[in-house]
Amino acid sequence: MAAAAASASCRRRPIAWFFAIAALLFFFSWYLLLDSAAVTPEPLLAARGQGLRVGSSGRKCDPATAALRVFMYDLPAEFHFGLLDWEPQGGGGGGGGVWPDVRGGGVPEYPGGLNLQHSIEYWLTLDLLASEQGAPTPCGAVRVRHAAAADVVFVPFFASLSFNRHSKVVPPARASEDRALQRRLLDYLAARPEWRRSGGRDHVVLAHHPNGMLDARYKLWPCVFVLCDFGRYPPSVAGLEKDVIAPYRHVVPNFANDSAGYDDRPTLLYFQGAIYRKDGGFIRQELYYLLKDEKDVHFSFGSVVGNGIEQATQGMRASKFCLNIAGDTPSSNRLFDSIVSHCVPIIISDEIELPFEDVLDYSKFCIIVRGADAVKKGFLMNLINGISREDWTRMWNRLKEVERHFEYQYPSQNDDAVQMIWKAIARKAPSIRLKVNRLRRFSRFETNRTDETPTRSSWLENQPS
Image 1: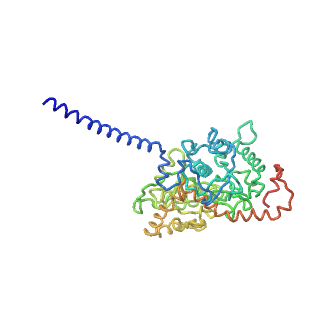
Image 2: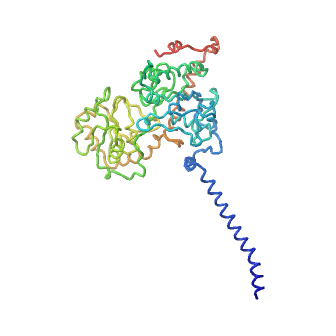
Image 3: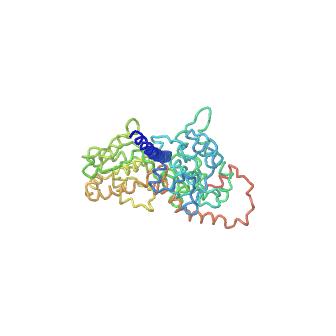
């Protein structure tokens, strides 16, 4: 009997070993699968979910399918990411190590607060680097290595950040580092064949801060400027015919999953900001005295100091309408804070230019009032009180649809602010080509000066009349 039991046990033992080994292999294979998924960075996972062309395998964007082909100068780091205290590490996806590797965790952080509102140079440059390095991007604009194959030439100078950080003169220097950088940029461009070929007419220059490129702008007038408005530019330097208006980056957070409809927003009209301004901003004072005592109106002084951004966030989300009034310049980031808060903007700024207005109808989600009408006693309150719940709800829903067009982010996504700017520049490409081709009409009869390097005085000959 004992022998029979031992024999049966021996027969079962190989079967037990078989199942044990099979189970071990099963769990080991699951471990490998989970481990391989875990090494994928979260931005890449998010990008795949949004249909972006993820370059995790090193695949770059195809210039043949891009809306815009861009030649970008390999400017020294002092003009761009060096302003963020980033130091070249070598490599960097080309350019002699002057660029960060944006495929992993090598993206330098941009400073927060009000610095962010004029940060477009950062986001556009990151997207161009992504198109070349194989990082996530919609591939709307693609970097090319030869200017002859490009629609435009991109100048990656972080002019807004340079002004914010280096506009003050530090003794014993007699001029600010910002002005010195502008001078070095002009010297760099003057020596480039790409500039001499077109006189700068196909160059894209980012100067979103109203005081960015304060000196160089008068030398760079043939370029395509990307600006927040034209308030501090003479018509001979900038205008809608050749330039692009870009949105500010909002400083209040997005109102995700917003269900706060008409009855959930107790404040009728909201404004919080600087009240006493110069230039076109005098209208703020007039409106303050007209509106400060009106029922359900919040009109008060405020700033980003302390918990100012948090207060503005809560105030806009609790309001049906948000005032966007001209200040020192025709535009401000308050409009874009209103949009992402889904607080219907009331724009009172006669000189304002709105981003992407050739493709967006702002009357569907904003109310635009002439300054002369706004300061008439009772006009604004009668206008607002005459807007029905149904009309307000239509504008509120439209705000939630269009807010993605005003979002700066990395990786960039389809139809966000970065891609909308590229598309706006692409719409300028035919007129740019026309200008450059007209410039070349008689080039074969001119003396070949390609070996000459223009001096600083030659910039003065290139001034607008």
